[in-house]
Length: 158
Image (cartoon, rainbow, N blue to C red; front, side):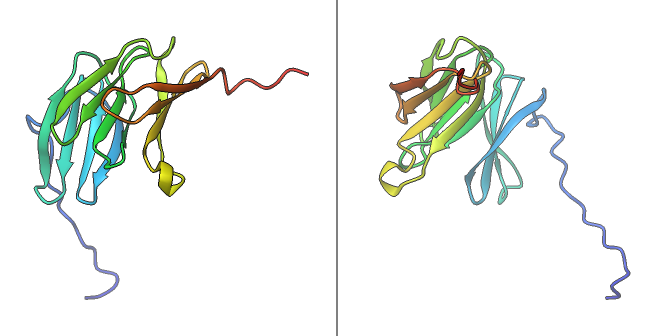
């Protein structure tokens, strides 16, 4: 093959009835061959590289914005809803475990699983809202707020 030859790669089109109807708001990896998308169309979709398509869809009651996979076995998905609420979904059972209403006063803009040290690996996750408030939660099917940090974005006053 001459190095100057053009190669065209055809990709399978996902524009079908299984595609999101709204804008995708976040993507996250589940396994080496799977990732999940959430959308303002109020749904999650799990996409499988081996199947080359959507393996299942989970619909919610509000638009979804941010999400992360957490839990010691990476078996929970946490996603922010349109307001300051979030919900927890069990990835093994593919079902909703808990909705935490009004977890923040404002829209949640970031969710991160804490996996820094092996002893704490994915046992906690953090939510941050648009006004800078941060909550740390236990990563289980009914999360408890462990502690609260007010407005981490604000500079200290002298």
